Amino acid sequence: MSTFARERDVAVRAACEAGAIVLRYYVPGIASREKGPDNPVTLADLEANGCIHRMVEDAFPDDGWLSEETADSHERLAHRRVWVVDPLDGTKEFIQHIPEFCVCVALVEDGRPVVAVEYNPAADRLYAAVRGEGTTMNGKRARVSRTARVPDAEVLASRSEDKRGEWDAFKPRVHVKLTGSVAFKLAEIASGAGDATFTLTPKNEWDICAGSLLVEEAGGRATDLEGRPLVFNQPSPLRPGMIASNGVLHEGLLALIREVGPPPKSS
Image 1 (cartoon, rainbow, N blue to C red):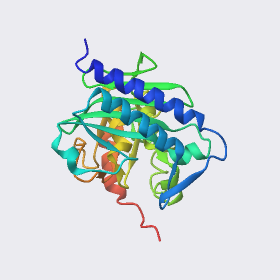
Image 2 (cartoon, one colour):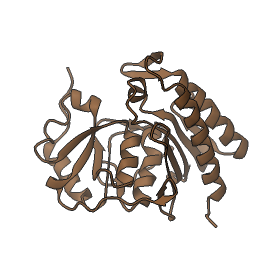
Image 3 (tube, rainbow, N blue to C red):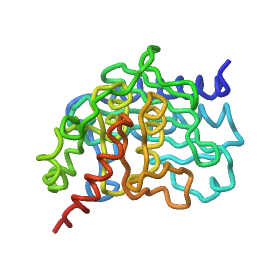
Image 4 (cartoon, rainbow, N blue to C red):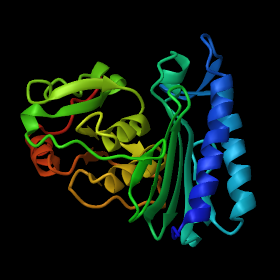
């Protein structure tokens, strides 16, 4: 019996129900508004967030909560267990009708994710992991790739980062593949459909929490840009960059990042 069987079950059901909501809105021309520069939100984000929050709160009323679409409260810092949620990671892809987005639900205990579920409703792919128990995709065991040489690595990269020129220095050194949201990229790494991904720009906990456990439990590594474990439920949810890989490539890619240096400042 899994240590977190009930938590995993609730996370799976919440992600699937939220995914069904997201899919209803997955039509060309969906209306959105800007929460901030280059940061859109749709009714799908908000309705899916409400669905997940209700289901988690009903099942685990004493746990903390951190979500992209809920006003943050430092009250969560007093909890050992905190749910970290992005009801729709990849809103830009969703709006553009690119099927590379995910619903993300993770449970963090003492700063480390212990349960992670991502659901891509457009592709009907459900990824799930419990710490120490492996990662599955649609119920089958998922494993990272075996690519061992950095020059051979297929690195999944952000389209918006690429537009800003942040990947130009890496393109001669690795195979760069432009791919959807960071959560989607992490799920792809966990299932071996890419060798690594990294970002040198800050990312929020809800973007990377579930996916980092999917990668680790599929045999890979997910760390900060110094190679240290990612720690969640921090006072600020913003993490200064991260890297995830099949594990074999990790040290080589960290060395490459150090060699290339920080991305160019956008004007």
